[in-house]
Length: 122
Image 1 (tube, one colour):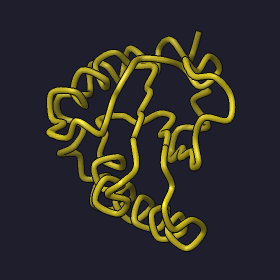
Image 2 (image 1 turned 90 degrees about the vertical axis):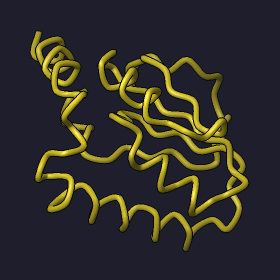
Image 3 (image 1 turned 180 degrees about the horizontal axis):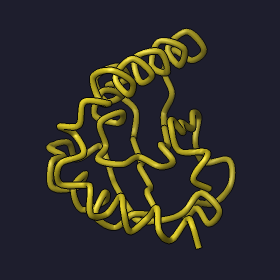
């Protein structure tokens, strides 16, 4: 029941999510660290997945860090996926609604999988 409440709350929050002060204070530093670590571990990943992608901020930064990678993002909140799609200008990034427990991809399809600030919601 709590997860359903979280999904609804995040869907409503989606239009203003990127302007929230936590983006600057928490999420951006975490995402920067994730990208630095990913780059140190893998030079040229072909496919990257972000589970709990929200509005797609991490994947947009990932597109710059890994210019040859295909990028996928999933989020349980429909509003987040809609916001990600509406602000995405890259045809290399695809977003869809899905939960971490039921990913719509066959196994072993990604070189890197990110999940930042979402695990506690599953």
